[in-house]
Image 1 (cartoon, rainbow, N blue to C red):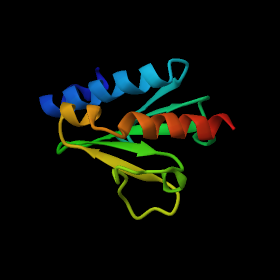
Image 2: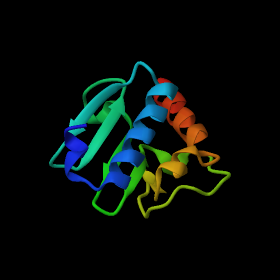
Image 3: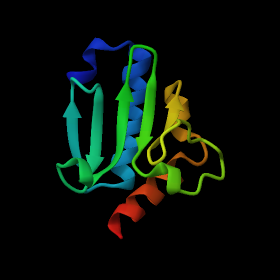
Length: 115
């Protein structure tokens, strides 16, 4: 919460809602706050190679970064970005955390890392 304190209320609310979803899907995830990178990472360990997803914050909003998202099924067409490996889902409000397909992307990302 201290990391998010300098962001607008709607960003804080969205990021905390997304954090709750991530931890419900991956209760054993290691959470890593990166203030200079303006993100919070979640993975199976503390290294970059262990990452599954990230919460990327800015004054304007929140993005859910999915490591290896370019290779995941995305039937709801939520993933954006020009990256060849990593993609993200734009979260404009806390309600977007509950959009159809978000939880499935998290589960697919976690399953991919477990392999």
